[in-house]
Length: 202
Length: 202
DNA sequence: GGGTTATCTGAACGCCTGTTCAAATCAAAG
DNA sequence: CTTTGATTTGAACAGGCGTTCAGATAACCC
Image 1: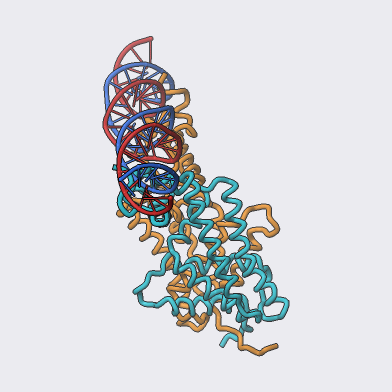
Image 2 (image 1 turned 135 degrees about the vertical axis):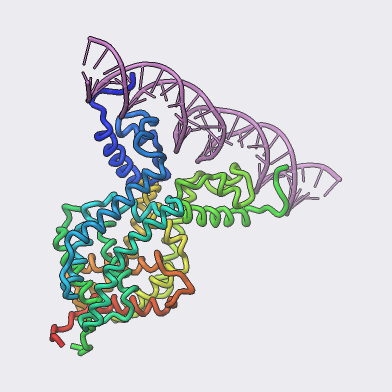
C-alpha cells in the first residue's frame, strides 16, 4: 500500500496544519509527536514531510498565519478616527477576533519559547505592530483630551492583557454571553483610560 | 564512585526543585528531561528519585508550593477593610508578589495542562481561593457604594489578567521602575471599577 | 490504456525518554 | 574502628523521538 484513495496535497496540507494546531494547543508543542499529528490526519509520519520541512516550521507557520490574519483583519476594516470610538472598536474587535480562534491564540502566546530565535523575532515584530495600533489610539486620545493616560505604552499593554484574559476563562453557554462580556470589558477599558471622577464621598 | 563528598538530602532536595523550576520555566515541562535536571544539580538521573516519586510530582510540588506561598502571604498580612484601600492593597500586593517569583508564576500558568486531572483540580481550587478574595473586595465595594461594577466576578478576572500582564513584559532596568508600574496600574484599576465621569465634552 | 508524477508507506537511523535497582560509597553513630 | 543507613552511581529496560528515503501506489494527462 502507499497512496490511498482520494489523497491530495490540497486536502492533506490543511488537514496537517489543522491537526497540528489542535494538538499543539491542547498538549503543547514539545509534548506532541509528529506520529501523533500523522495519526490524526490518518497518514504515516513520513508523509508529513511533504507539507513541512520540519516540526519547527509547522509551529512557526501556524503562528505566522495567525498574526498575519490578525493584522489583515485590522487593515481591511479600519476603525473610526475619533479616539473613544476607535478604542471601542479596537476593544470589541480584539475580544471577538481572539474568541473565534482560541487554539491559534493559545499557541501564539504559549509556544513562543519553542520558536527558534529568528522565528521568535519575526512573531514578536508582528505582535508589536498590533500593540502599537492600540498605543497610537491612546496617544492620540491623550493629545485630543479624550483620555487621561500617563503612559500610553503601559496602558496599551495593560488593556491587551485584560482583554486576553477573556480567552482563558470564557466558555460559551455560561451565565453571560460573549456580547455581554464584550460590553463589560469595554466599560472597564473606557473608564480605565478616562479622567477619574472627582471624589465626593457620596 | 557513588556518594560524593558533602552530599545531603537537605542540600540536594532544594537544589533539585530549584533546577527543575528554572528549567521548566525556560524550556517548558515537556521539553525538559530528568537527565537535564540531574545535570544541573550535578548528579545522575537516578538520584532524583530520592526526592520525587516522578517528574509529574516535581511539577505539581512547585505549583502547589507557589499557590500555598501566595495564599499564606495574603493571610499573614490581611488588608484594610475599607474597599478602596483593600483594592489598592490587593493590586500592589499582586504586582509585587508575582514580580518577585517570575519562574513560579510562569509555570503555574503555562504548565497547567501538564498536570494530571486531580492535580489540576487542586491547583485550580487554590487559584480560585485567591481570585475570590478580589471578587469579595469588589462585591463589598459595590454594596458600600465605593465601586460601580456590574459583574464583580468578571471584573475580578479582568483585573487579575491585567496585573498578570506585568510579569510578561516588565524587566528591571527599563525606563520605568516597578513602583511606577505599580502606581500606573493602580490608577487604571481604581478608575476601571469607579463610577465613570459624566461626559462634559470639555 | 499507458506513461508520468505527485503522494504515501514502511522500515530504518541514531538518539533520547522516564523509571528501576543492585551495587558502591560515604557520613555519622556506637 | 566498625557498623549502620542514607545517598548516589551506572547500567539497563522498553519504548518513543524527528527525520530520511527507496519503493509502492494512485491520480492525472495525453
